[in-house]
Length: 372
Ligand code: CO8
Image (cartoon, rainbow, N blue to C red):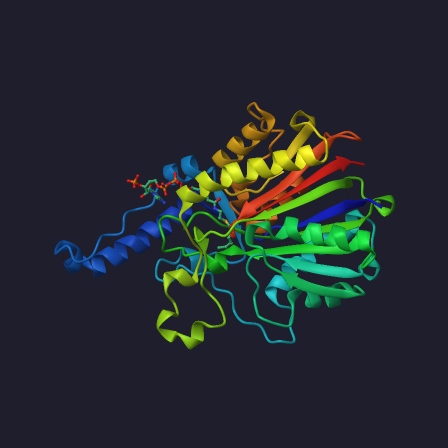
């Protein structure tokens, strides 16, 4: 039996922050800190915080703006953290809310009801709480049957989630599986860190998987194969966790947020991903030239160009390897799903394409698709 992606859904938060706005807030924060530490800086005991730059951000990453669930707190130089009030347990949690919004769009475009779903996987890089699982809250909100669970493989959560869903459908564990990817990256981004303050945005995506013969969506794709890879690295790390309270001296330190060695990540992940894709194509007996579209993880525009070039053996056209990070920034696991959601027109029945993620872990996932 073959499995298909029958539809997708996207929730885009209401606020966008341009590079100009973000850099103005960062530079106001830096000026405040430098003024407060003027003596230490003058005596060489502390280093001044260097200003951020719009031109640098755009050139180094391709990012021009990002969507966020809350904007004022991020842009307040005295705060630099989104302001997201806690909600009573009786109300939907924000992560479930944005997952449900994306899921409803996916259900609608596949002409399915929530009751026809028998498994929900919430696959994302930052879960709001330890338990109960966000996925179970989403399952209840949609009136879905069966079971639900959360999983986290950072930026590769969506492709790993799709692999699990596809395998479960083929094994008969479930029939229609929703994989949701709610990513509130602004909650784990250090907006006071010049090296990374521009990288992430918030979003929610959903992918509905079913047996290919049952797929009703107009933009459905058969999954020809999935291939996953992981390789341990400390170059992208976040030490936030339940044991922090057992070592209170570390609470609030920068390592409890997203931290990376961006250059090393770039250099090490590009070959890892290109090799994964090429090995996957070979395993399926397919030529790289047969790929009509590459929906790649959206972390860095230059990185995507390099990966696409290594796979295709030539420069990709903008249509072949669509970029959405200019307006969404890096949305962790949701990035390649947004690219797929927004840029899958123009393909004909039988055309081959690739959806691919890569990120912390390191982790990478390749999903080879055929247009139905
Ligand atoms: N403004 C001006 N100058 C700057 C800034 C800035 N904001 N930041 C750095 N610079 C300066 C540096 O100081 C440096 O100066 P000098 O040359 O004098 O030392 C110079 O610019 C160059 O700095 P870098 O070498 O750091 O810059 P790069 O060209 O490497 O670009 C990038 C930095 C854009 C971060 C790039 O390295 C990159 O995109 N790398 C890949 C990153 C990647 O793919 N990461 C994946 C992580 S995502 C993931 O796995 C999900 C995790 C879970 C999500 C968590 C949500 C928060």
